[in-house]
Amino acid sequence: MAFDPATMLTLTIAIAAAAAVYLLLEWRSARDGSLLCWSAGFATITVGSSLSLLRVDGYFFVGVWLANGLLIFAHWMFLFGVIRFVGGRPSRSWALLPAAWSLLLLLPDGPESSKFYLIVNSLLVGFISLRASALLRLAPDTATVGTRQLHYVLLVHGVFYIAKATVTLLPGTLIDLTVFRGTIIRVSLVEGVMAIMLIALSMTGTVRYRRESMIKRLAERDPLTSLYNRRGFEARTRRNLANVSAAHPGALLLIDIDHFKLANDLHGHAAGDFLLVTLSDLTRQILPEEALKARLGGDEFAFLLSDTSAQQIEHFGEELRVRFYETAAKTFNTPYPVTLSLGATLFNQPPKDLNALLEQSDRALYEAKRNGRDRLEVRMNG
Image 1 (spheres, rainbow, N blue to C red):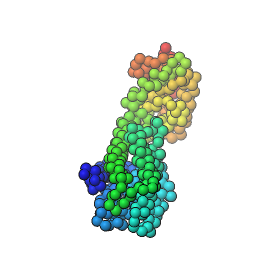
Image 2: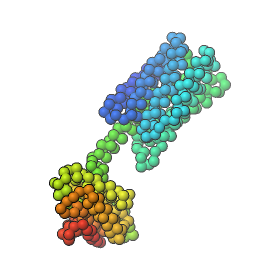
Image 3: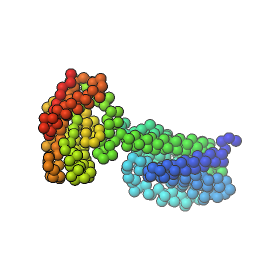
Image 4: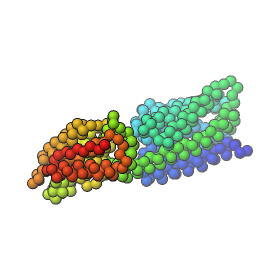
């Protein structure tokens, strides 16, 4: 028979073992704690399903009690992995699960014990799965395709186990765990194969997507300042520029550190790094949070602001200029002061070309340097 218990358990063992090995290999390269937890969960299912095959030979303790206990522990590991994935902490109350399952050892062998085992097992697995699913209901800007898929798979899996516990309470329901007798048990075995496969695919997809996002983030960020690099800046300007209008004008601000090379030559590259990090920290503090911030290269920075004005740009530029000079003067002694030159272009309609906008701001920046440095020059576009 295609869907006999032995076949279903064998499929479960194969899928769970493959998932455990794959996630373990992923963990060895990524060192993500959630991967290790999920791998341990699938390894536990592999052992538990193998032990379940022994129940038909009369090994009740190993084939029923221990095997079902391992199923609960595996889902606990799934939950713990989800907690690690979302950056939370597990509640101490979850440590009571092994103690609660241990109490079932006091039950005598028999039909009623099988029902009670199934009810308790189903409720524990169901509630653990639902809790893990709830943790994956992330904010829209944080959730990914993988996390949403895993959320719904665990949700359906948890609801199935809660429903299984409810159906078991109906009068006349046949439950015999020792020989896999009863429709509920057989349906549960089929659901188990499907659930393990879907959970495994969802977990691997979730982790892969996060790794790809991390790689993309690293490729678009300046490693020293953590601001966007030129590639990341250009990739995000289109959406910001599209929202510009006469009622909500925008501005592109370019900043260059005056006598940066002099500070580098006199005090070493560590001094240059300090100045770059100082400027990036000041822009985070002074400029609006939604402003697009980037280090284009060397000591040149670019900032795209939305819904702003000439007065606001002058205010931001003055505060940046004064606070940067104060920090640099206190930290490094140089023949010429280490200051900021700033060039800005204000525009009230989306520009056709970002490069043209950059060139305009660059001309304003050059004008600031030519007029003595340590100043802001603002130009209007349109």
